[in-house]
Length: 164
Image (cartoon, rainbow, N blue to C red; front, side):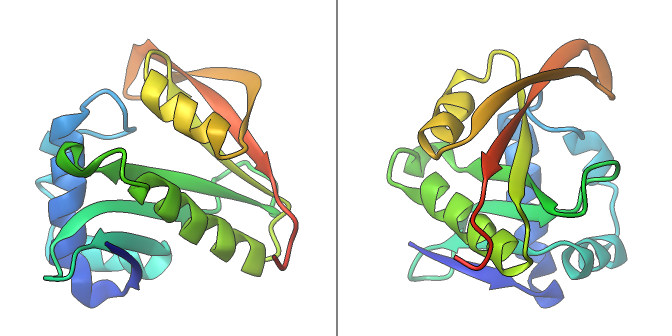
C-alpha cells in the first residue's frame, strides 16, 4: 500500500472512497452519503483543488483509504485540520491509518502549522485510540454535530514542530 497525494483528475477515486466511507460509518463524518451522492464532477474537482487529499492505494491502483487537510474556519491560521480519514474495513490494522496521518502531518509541517487538529465523534473509540497513539491529545472542547444535534464530538490536537 502506498500513500499518494491526488489531484483533481482523481476525482472519481476520491468520490468512490468518500462515499464508501460515508456508507461504512454514517455517523462518523460531518456529511451524509445521500448528500454527497448528489455532488457533480465539478464539485469533486473543486474540493480536491481546495483541499490537499491523499489516497492509500494498492499496487493495482485500487484505493483503500483517504485523508484530507483543511484550514478549518474559525481555527488559528497556524492549525491544520485533519478531515475525512477513513480506511476500508478489510485492510484496517495494517498501518494505513498511521500512514495517512503521517502524510497529513508532513504537509501541515511544510505549511508551517503549529498544530494539527480533528474532531472525534463520541463512541468512535477505535478512531480516538488511533489518534491518541499518534500523539494527539483530547482538548475537552466539545460540540454537537451540526447535521445531527444528538451526536457530540470532541476536538483533538497534535502539537507539531514546523519544518519536520
